[in-house]
Image 1 (tube, rainbow, N blue to C red):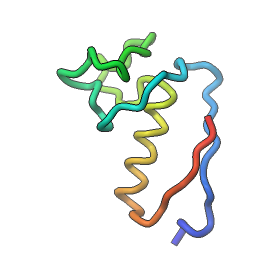
Image 2: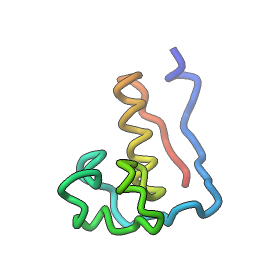
Image 3: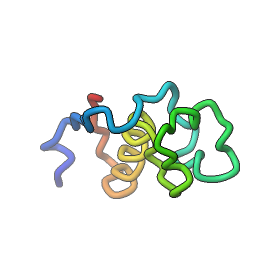
Image 4: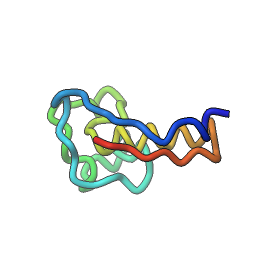
Length: 81
């Protein structure tokens, strides 16, 4: 598998979205009734309205990690933002 060949990912979208202050307790939390949660506040582009879980850098990385672990359960990558 690939999990023993990749240590992690470096992510840079050149300021597309703010970094974010807090990871949501559950991926996708901000795309529902919890939009007032502290982790949902950094969304200057209004991506939550488009049902986008990655509305800031921190939550995008958390979403990426969540989806990778579903596909490759033993894979625990590191991320640099």
